[in-house]
Length: 219
Length: 174
Image 1 (cartoon, rainbow over the protein chains, first blue to last red):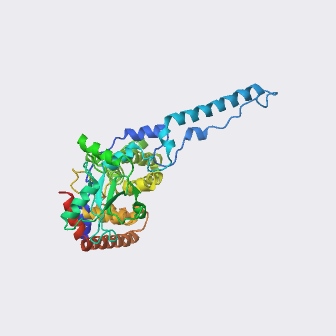
Image 2: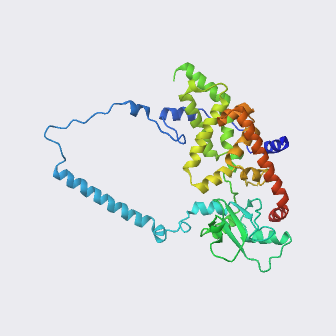
Image 3: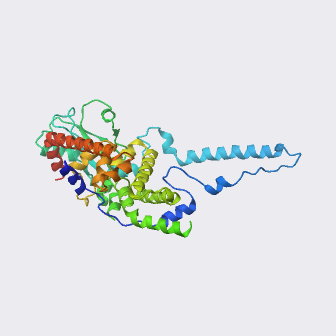
């Protein structure tokens, strides 16, 4: 079993790295809070005692004029917010489906992610997924159909379907002919715009892999 | 911070920041890793008296908690992609991309995977790895033995059923 650990050791994605800058730590200490620590403390604010504002003896409640102005401002702000939402996001109002509301960045990530073929030696009921490979501007179904044939299987009469298994991977299955196959696999349908994004990626010649951050890890 | 504390804090950083950064980079994306590293040392500098010797297990345990907070803050699907990102490195320049052993590691539970990676990637001694996880050395030894056995079982099952997917994978790359 020590061989197994040695094999894992050899696959270390970050064998070494540069030291970070201590200045970030000093800056955060000065600001008095952290981004991911999960707790924000503002020591100075907590330590300061609460002071009550003194009011003049006869002034206990806001006058009628002040109430009217406040109410008017509140109503106008609500109307402005509603109008802004209607103008800014007409597409989102059209449908509440999460598939249709997929942002362009998410579709782009999927189109530059990976493909896996979950075809199994026995067909849809016998799943054995391949290791994911980069999309590189290719159709996932075309890649898996070609691989299926190259692996000695006939594609005659076989239909393939594709699903998003994660934010960055598309899996291709043998279609079982029933609706909702992606959901049955625990996946999501391919979002609209995916095929166009794959084509754009191919023509731009800058197809990226599933882990865009792997490029950062190289640095 | 007074001068002796500042000096101690800087020494702590100089000695361990690189290891903490490497730990974070192996588990989250680069931008989050930078935040994790600075947050770990903010916690350490605030509680300098509580940092034990050796400090690295304590720092990695803190990093582990901060990363867990980060993962809880994102959606479930996004978290799965984040956790598996280093294990499914798909860059064409990454020599380990798509390695079956990485696949096998990805199929382990998070606890089993962490036990193996603390020894294999962080190269911690068992007592230090146990300190990171907050368990005894004996308990860590048992967890490591079980995790290695489960990984071996996954790899063995992969080899038995892999012939068709292996041919498929080879053909996908043509």
